[in-house]
Image 1 (tube, each protein chain N blue to C red):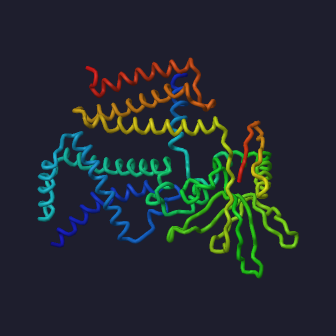
Image 2 (spheres, rainbow over the protein chains, first blue to last red):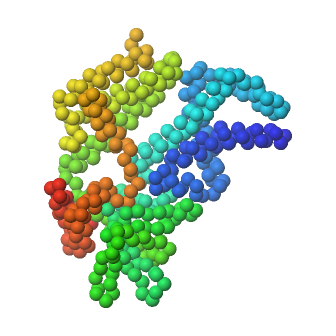
Image 3 (cartoon, rainbow over the protein chains, first blue to last red):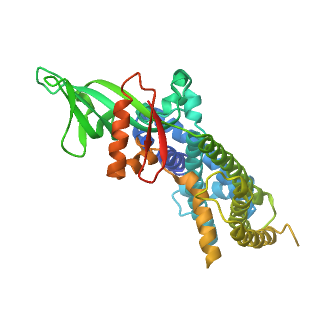
Length: 339
Length: 72
């Protein structure tokens, strides 16, 4: 019984919890990375298990379609191995089977990484976390410090343009009778690994209010580090850039381009797995298909691209077009779409 | 060789959309302004002026002749 519990635990950890942990490691990144290790153990375990199951389902679907496995076939082999281990016998696994198992594990980790990174990117890029509170990350300071709150419904009236920088006015209690007031441009902040709360803020071009002179005087030095536990009061002032109509067009254009690219890449990534082909041809088709799609988007979007710096001259477009056609033909041949 | 350079430049421009950092508490434009001493002075002065509630916006011309309008 003891042996059975140990084996079951190992199976659950390796096959279900571990992929979920990898997923979450890459979902919580950047300024949200510390959310990965914060919270109740039970909560983290359940969410890891949940995402682990999803990663496992996706990996199994892709892997079984690539190598022609069926659920009953794998179940039969797994039962034999499990019975051997439960009886304290070394399982009879052939070298090719071992390669498949290790390959599956590697694929599981890659899928967990891709899924975590992609979902994080989609939520951040399309500002889903700002529109829907359920998707919001725990580090709420990042939203305040980056001026992203102006995209939230609660602060919609503040919207003025493109955020450039955040100026911070802080009142600090330094143990003396009078509190200090410091003002400066926010350059960095750090979050506590244990609690997930704000720990330190870093200001540049800082000034300090002089009670006697009744004005702000520059603080000598390049960076002022303020521990947040000394802060009594914090005031944020955002500086926005008023966008010209061309700049607004540029932003809309980039968003449209991103939507096109993402939808195309998703199709190219999923479609080959429904074809009855060798796994290497599928991977080759995905690589060449992605480059073809990228070149297609670059060529078709170039005439309407409002950004003069990245616009490609017309004579160079033909070179890109010929390259795209070559990549397209290779893709179609690899995926066996043309005989 | 030129084609490879062209492709890598174009692909780099497109992929830059995905891989740019959105985690900094100072925008790329502000960092660019702060890296130039002259622009930095102009920017700080403009932001200081914007503290006055009567001033709604402030225009500055950067060293590369780019004109930007700031609001606070």
